Image (cartoon, rainbow, N blue to C red):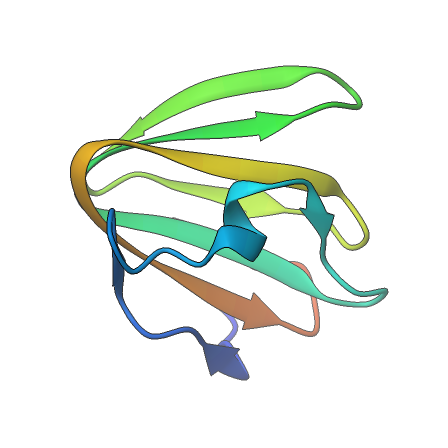
Length: 90
């Protein structure tokens, strides 16, 4: 798996920034990997439509310039990793 060039701090349901809770997108040439460390998180992508509940240990890849947002489901912890090439997840 290629290595991320940056990551966010670990966020929980109280520290998750409002900017991640509303529609936003990754930059051109940037892939994001949302990794749920504890609890659960809802990932929503308007186009093409997708809504998925991620549990502890699960990850999802966000393509460059893909509009999306996340919603905590109760107590949770998560982090986002950023890549400059498509990440190869195991």
